[in-house]
Length: 265
Image (cartoon, rainbow, N blue to C red; front, side, top):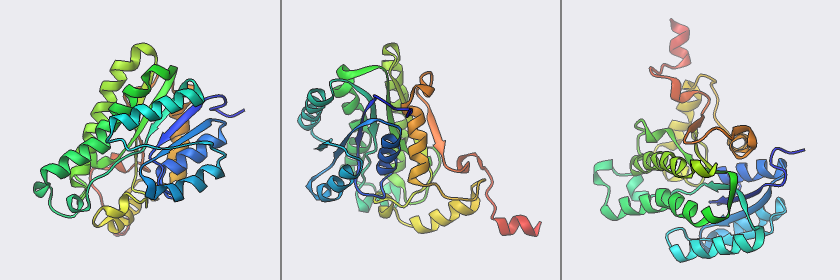
């Protein structure tokens, strides 16, 4: 018996086999969920369709989350195919490369709006569109990062967007609580994904993370997938409005010193 047997789960934001969304998809499949996958844009289709086949997922739909009509259409298609939905995963974020390489104060108005629209408002829009077909005890979740609450160099407007995403998580949890629908966020440590590739200095940050986190190791998409299973399952039915850190404890460390410095003491 899998933890998600009989549950219909939709995952938005799969890009390739390195995506956090792929770790979640595989974990959901392992635990018995009926899967639906949505991706952004034709260019990702050739990467996503073969991945969907690997997990025997028949419902694969494109959705540009900046367009309300596309969100409405994908919700309509999901209703026809699944009837009701038990799990909705939002693994969507975007900021222009320029916004992640210049200082934050040079963020353009258009770049700010784009990051907020795709990375934050899409969660609100998807939740609203799917609300009529979410079962009681359904679970909505999104992906965030520690750059939302502390400065992560070069993360810039994405850090601000993730802060807004975490706040949206709490407000949505408040709205949907009476219907017994919970909304949570997973804050994952740095992972080598397509999105991370656009952040300046990511390679150095990735190494620093492994050196400084209490567990002295990086996080994998499988780690995040397993945590997502918990949030999707009935084991977490009284948890809502929370940010669950899956980061080897990195967020708990205030003063960071390397292992070499520790040894020299």
